[in-house]
Length: 151
Image (cartoon, rainbow, N blue to C red; front, side, top):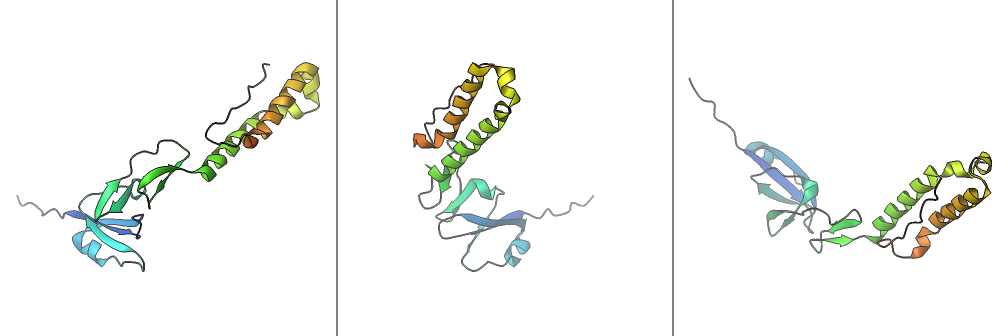
């Protein structure tokens, strides 16, 4: 019984000057060689498969970025490290705030006073105002969220 020769897979990586992987192709050596290199990109041949989003290139080697320390971090290819991203952080804070406001929209309806009573209605109004004021706290990494009023 004859054995078919197994073709060794290879990866060709296309990356920019900062080491950000822009595209990776996995195939045989011949297929990898046939891949055109886009203008402004560099080419690297690698013998393993990896995720372009979790790796970068430095000194001709593919390096794993590791996990982000938190949701408000982005990978800086110039520094080759995770950095806090204030724009991303504020985006996450606003999205969280908007979801909290949306989940309490029912307290804005005219029937809410009768359902809640005047004191609870005012507590919910204060809570919603505190949510709207969250961006005024100034630091997206240390947001103090207001407490949800008891029902």
